Image 1: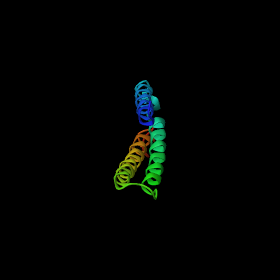
Image 2: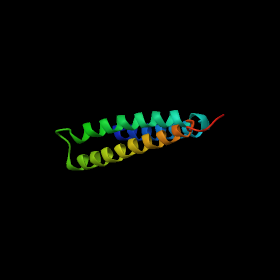
Image 3: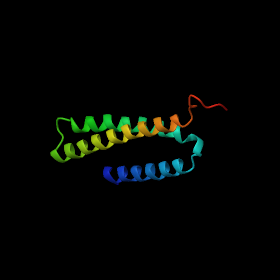
Image 4: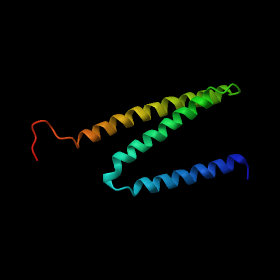
Length: 98
């Protein structure tokens, strides 16, 4: 097997495992899970920046790296906005009694 075939198998296994893990999460854990995925996306931003800024990168690699930086950054920002909105649902309002 070539290196690319191994990489594709690892990607497919990770995608399947991630899908199965997220599908089985109870609704009470969605906010912490969202925070975790934001952290993973932040790591993807750093990796994409490193790939884009490599001195021996081809123009195609730089273009893909730029797209990855933009997509991951958008994912992080929107994820934090959604997490903040979800957490606000659990806060008490000022005049509200329980």
